[in-house]
Amino acid sequence: MGLFNEPCKNLLELFPLRNVVVVVVVVVVVVVVGLILVVVIVVVVVVVVVVVVVVVVVVLKVVIVVVVVVVVVIVVVVKVVVVVLVVVSVKVVVVVVVVVAVVVEVAEVVVLVVVEEEEDEDVEADDIDADADDDSGGGGDDDDDDDGDDDDDDGDDDDDDDSVGGGDDDNDDDDDDDDGDDDDDDDDDDDYDDDDDDDSGGGGDEKQQTSAFCIS
Image (cartoon, rainbow, N blue to C red; front, side, top):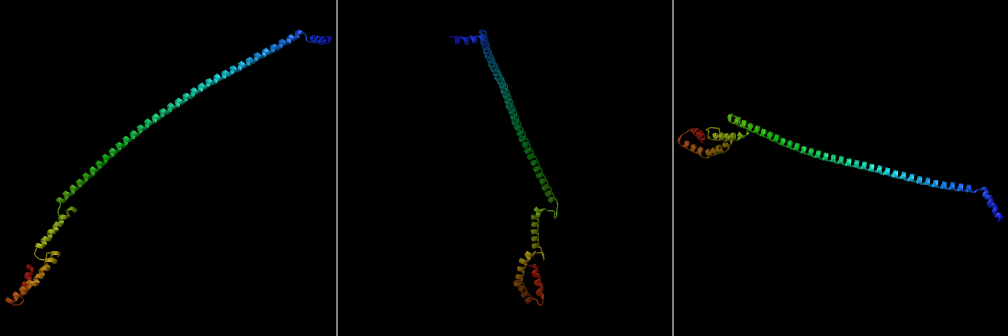
């Protein structure tokens, strides 16, 4: 027993009771302070995280709002541009169609006026030519009056047929004179020769033959 009491005694001497209490208190304080610090750190971290999340959410909301606003603005601008382009295009097309229609109508009117003027000029020219043909004499006839000239030529042929002497044309010479010559040679000359031989003497037959040929 004395052996065990002596070391304890020595320990107590080395470490008195108050020192143990102090050590325990210090340890407790350190532990408590450490826990408090841990809690504080955790709280701070949580607060920071919350703040960051809030900020991020706010920023995201702002970004989302900004994006939405930008998208809406873009859509509105596109709609306005499309509407303006469509309206302007339609108006331009309508104006072009109206202008083309007016130009076509004006062109038709101009063509009709030009055609009427040309027809009037042609009619006036025909009237002037007709008046000139009616008033003029001789060779002033145009191509249309050539038929009349042909009739006059026919009349000249008739006159040649009715005239006395050598005025007959080639057709009359080919038909009438040849036939007359044949008849005179065959019938009349012989008769006259016979009559002259019977009644008169000499060369009286030639005169009678010449007069008979002229009469025929």
